[in-house]
Length: 233
Image (tube, rainbow, N blue to C red):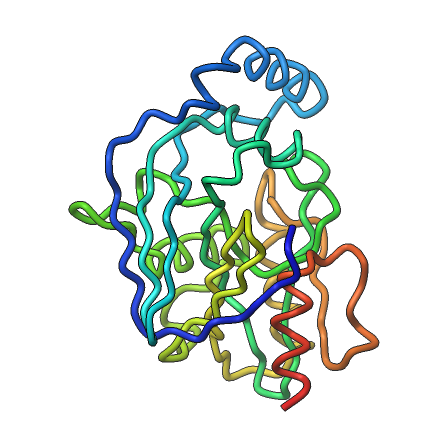
């Protein structure tokens, strides 16, 4: 990945268009074998349909890009093999939960997920449920992921008006602060209670970040870059 750069935008113009990904076609047998091995290690992995991006441009306060449909197995192989096709990127939304006392709230992914042990904000690779007409609705994707992972609904937080897009070459994390009118410890306890009620939760633990000392190596660089920007203000 390239060093992260952060672009603040207020508009996301993300078109979903048909496109055949050469990587997924030309390396089909290798991809299928890779996914079969991944499933042996983590049987809950599901080869559903996801959306990846191409041709991203930042113009003023707008991010524009084209998205295409592919299978999760192809995405996983592309990621695990070091992003061999640099003409596409993983563009996803993240709900940066911010408690009333200034604590960011992040989740640690469970061992059965495709990112075990990683710590970040609620997020997920966009899928077909996030399409509205011919466009990708990142705001809806974020709301869905936040509810699935934490139990919080849109009534529990106030989204910021802008997105901070952290660009790393092969990924664009479209991050939006979600203000929650609750102190960090209370918010963590509420989310932990929700996780305890789930049969197979995605998250294994909840982490609070109040200052630079709370940042860890388990947090991807695009997450720490975003938090560092906010803590430096």
